[in-house]
Length: 479
Image (cartoon, rainbow, N blue to C red; front, side, top):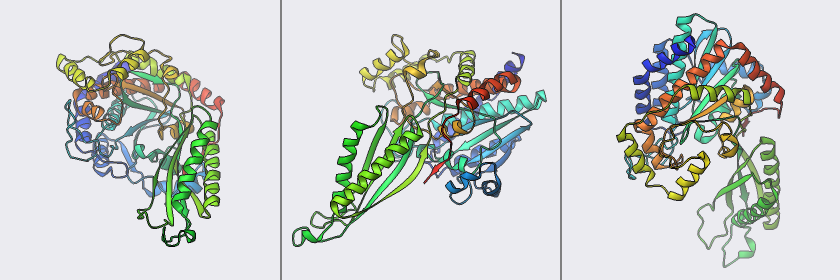
């Protein structure tokens, strides 16, 4: 407990820096693939702290693809290196090597001031409606606290802070995995802002993005319609087929799409059109099976319209591999981290935000917590919360959990009833509500890593469960 207390004290000393990071990233939102300022800012802090920093497009990762322990990844790698705005910051020596995952990409169109009415900072601009400004801040703060503990204690062990871009595109960690950036890690810790303090033994839906391109023949739609072969007809027929397919897949699968007609006028038979699909399911093998069936539907649509179809698979991310021993450790540390305390002014702001939400949605969320009226959930959700309220979104963090055991926790950063990817979430993430949730996450992360460094029997138990779970062979889906 003395070691844990020392780490907690380091987190407390870093409170102002954690707040500063939250505010900088929130004030400089950058969408996936454009996180230049975010990376420069975060790596500057880590380098000043004494971490060894490597950038995602560094040449050592390209050589790792050729010479690394997982050569089968090479076929999935584009350009032989990780994403430009990924990085690895490392401190310490020896094992265990523990990864802490940080994200910092924003969402398009969710610019928002820290107020209780919809008011963008920049009309149409990006904003942190998923709280990745908090995510990056807490992970960096937790890693620095652990680094200082390692420095003072002299014990063996290595902490790695991974800067992970493009999470909202579901591609960053996939590309990082393909470039071997996670090689050498023993375990990983991740977190996400939410509306309650909770842990997840497993979760996320596996997901693959695929585009279907159809090629036909133009013609005048009135003068010579018989000469035309409409690519748009093929898209519409494919979507009809996909609608029927939905009845014949597993209940937990999700198939959703958008389309582009190509911008033709109604009197022109369009010779090209496309449909963009996301397929989600609890496991990647299920996604791949459904995708094969979708491709057959596309081929059928092409046959009916005498057009040609082509499927182009984009990035895909895996589900989170279950690890109950790791979740137990995260749960214990989340409870040990204490309670978030809010001022009357903060609670008043939270109530203003909550009042903009559908009351039925708020009540439904309160039922999930098995509690009466909830404004800011200052408690830790019951241990079975992850089973009752599964993660039905997708995240490239699932890919990391396929490589090494990963622990995942959430902390309260916005009011009950609020969901991510909304202006209300963005407003909360730019306020002290979110900043307090980030500091709570930093404290929890530091505690978890401290336990992993000092309790080899816990590490062994987690890794044993990971290895015995087996499962599908992992290979990054990079298109």
